[in-house]
Amino acid sequence: MAKKLKLNGTARWIIVALAVLAIAFNTGVTYNHIYHLSKQVAKLTESIEKLDGKIDAINIKLTERTNQ
Image (tube, rainbow, N blue to C red; front, top):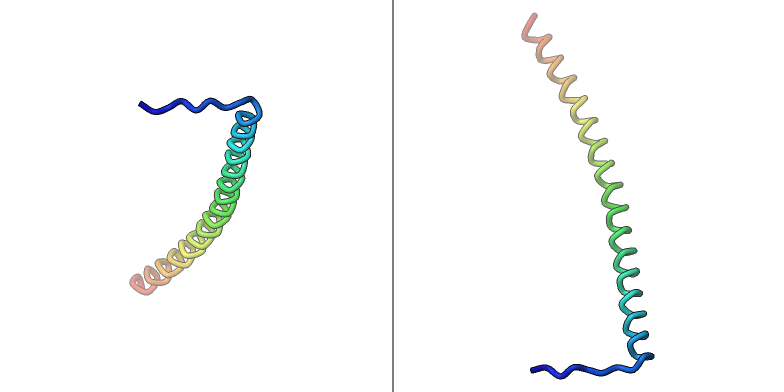
């Protein structure tokens, strides 16, 4: 069976502080990734909308040619 490590009050507070700092750091990193990812998704959406407009224009031209 594993030994239970007995820590004094100062050591416990240091471990708790390090854990809180690690959580805060990881939260910041995650937020940064989500922020940049959402910007990239917006750019991709804009590009897809432009392509969709071009495809519609091509379809209209092809329809006009076949109706002539």
